Image (cartoon, rainbow, N blue to C red; front, side):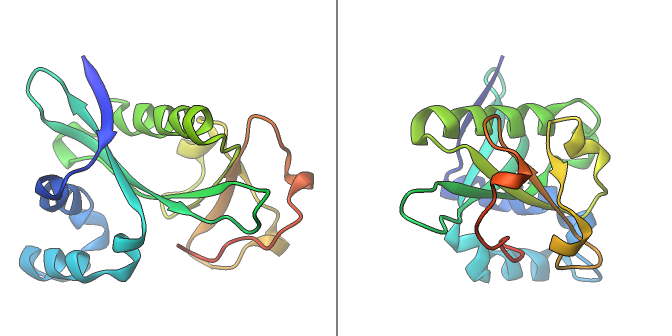
Length: 164
């Protein structure tokens, strides 16, 4: 069995290391962990993990940000989605993204989600995300995508969030 839960302080180094090969550039693992620990961006969000219940192994992780552009609208940003190298291609990140969205829809009545993809768009399209039009894109190497079960792109009447 697998379960989704909020990450604990004790999880954070494992979580950071899930993305080291992709975001670590030419840093040592120690430098990368220090950068992550000191990141104001990482301190602003809420981390979630997908965990194997029998072994308590962390299978995938992501962070969720509050992006609420107005009091009436609940908007979240999903970022830093990662899975340890040896566990990739098993669907763990897909499960975590889908279940985190379901959880936030039920518990917080959130119907609007954004993410910036650094890995292309195919993975997220399979999860129901759509690519924002070119004129709404803000970055060359990261594609902004949107997900909502209830609202289409034409319903977005607020500023597209910058990279979060």
